[in-house]
Length: 322
Image (cartoon, rainbow, N blue to C red):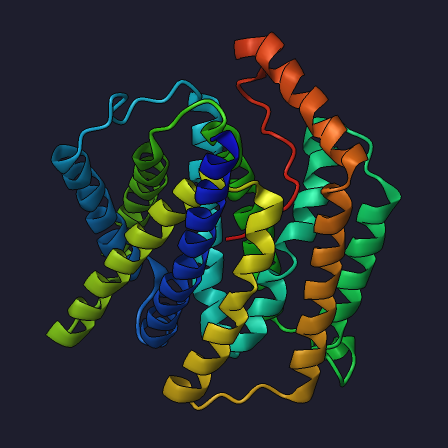
């Protein structure tokens, strides 16, 4: 009976992740569409406020026992801050870089997650993690066939987006170990986005035609759905299982870039993506070994014993994504 329940959870989690990749890629496409004409606060003040509203309405329709309360305020605050930073950086990376090229940095997320487990949790970073990081770095270098002098501001911004997005999702995984109120994990990061972007909005506001307003509303719907689905899927599947499925996002990004923006990635982009994905999959395989799973179980046992003393410490990120 237990095996059937686990299998059902794994299947539903897999389907949720695949749906997430389609929805978040659509949201990214809308971001790229609007990024050329508006500053980040204009899109995100609107979308952040709408997502907060959608979250409150969803809680009214199907109330959660915990509501919007959280027992991990420190972890939630860090997740919210990193979500704000990654959101802004992804906005400008989509403005400055071809659509599919941004995926190179999204694909680095599972590798960064392996490194974060050592830097944040003060755990020993195994050699395999460093090898995967080196391979991923080689994959990133492949998008610069003319040499490092072709590195642009867009690439640096995309790197910051990838790093901060990784940390945000590590915190989501950590909080999910203690709480089941997935709406709270959508509510607080978007509340932070609304407040931060709303404060800057008066300085950059431009009148928007009704079509762009509708695009912003559609973006908010996509973002709300994608983030809620991701939080739920991370409860059903371990992070190391979620990450390879999220590589499907590259397919959506290539299709959207080609159909709507006329962007056709060069061969070097495909090679770079292949190396980054292969490095991430190797790291995931290594982390799913019996030795790694025994270490994971020991760590989770320590979390249970330590209780509230670990409020500020996230779980080890075996591999997660945006």
